[in-house]
Length: 308
Image (cartoon, rainbow, N blue to C red):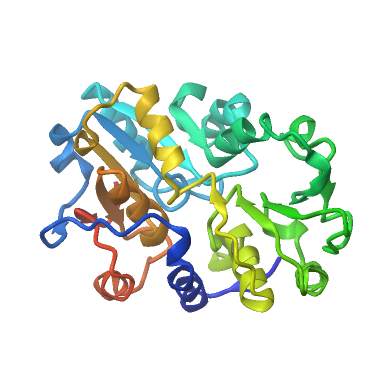
């Protein structure tokens, strides 16, 4: 695990704004609300980030399960929209049931789902190197790709394209250093299954940030001068949002609310496709000055709430 902090996280996101959709902020200032019920009647579909909105790790955030039940009573369409690249539609319902939520598989869309759709179109997998653990839900679709974790991060000569799929405990600082060293004086096509720069985790009740695939790609570009703009299969890329809206027959994105805890993924991505956005303070920015974070990022949500 490569550990970073919130300052590094925000610097990485700000440095790679050219990878993301253009900022499309609301015309006015953010409106503070006590919770989603206050604005629920404005929307037909609620898209929800997972970590920092519904749960922290395997633990539901206080009030989140009740909030989902309340939205169901109001007959609102729901969809969890996550940059999780270890969960696909086949296992999503079981995962969320273990956390106390009643989402069906059709009510969860992850960046792994989007990545798997793309993997089915790959003609020459041997030219791709992938950062992913040796055992992964998409193993069948990853067949033929070079597993860079098994190569200790070294990119073989025959590889000219890189898929940054999974981070976490399986990708080490040594692997990252080897990735960078073996990429010197070479250029690669790049794809990000998970565009997140970092993800929170807990040790002894304290929150930490672990680097994730977006960070690995950012460091590679910074150190080796990669010119390609990565293809994004998760937030803030538009594909995952448009996939969800098409699935629900949405023609007016302003009737959709994206609820998240991260400005550069949930809020930027939601704004970019014309959805309204709600930033929660109970996630990655917990205990920080949320107004300052918004000012620093230049990304403005429609609404701010302490929790669901």
